[in-house]
Amino acid sequence: MLESLNDLRKTISEKCQLCKNEDVAQIARRYFVINAFDGALTVLGIIIGTHVAQGVAQSKVIISAGSGTSLAMGISGVFGAYLTERSERIKDHDEVSRSRGEVTKEALYLALVDGFSPALAAIVGVSPFIVSHLGVVHYETAFVASVLMVMAELFSRGIFLGRIAKRSMILHGFVTLLAGVATFAVISTLALYL
Image (cartoon, rainbow, N blue to C red; front, side, top):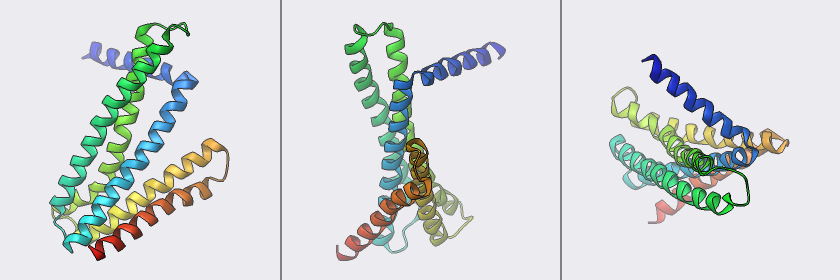
């Protein structure tokens, strides 16, 4: 047990070393924000589209669709980013004095950030429906909570971007929140006419 904890600590320490590489850290931040944004807006689209199409949908439908989508985004992100980053870094390997092991570790780290960020953002949006499916809250409460949670995710990503840019975090938050509001409005409007 102690040996496995030491291995885990060593692995985390190695990953933190990758974060000290500013090139890797910048790319990871971009992947995190862009893909979490994609995950949040995608699950928002699923939630609103399903809600409008079915009137009062079953929580299970949204859980299945949202979970399936978040899993697919996660797998796609991990494999796509790993293969792309590894190829790009191998290409640059000869120009920069880094080992193939470092190149592979950087690519794996970036792939995990790329894959997990949209999946986690989507799961946050679906989570109220899990509580509803268990009978703890009513479907309508889950719908409202889910939309609010996704909007909060979007707003927090904007704050993060404002902090990186050293500009107004609140303004950035409202700009990203606007994307969620626009998504809500467009999908709701289109669904009414379909």
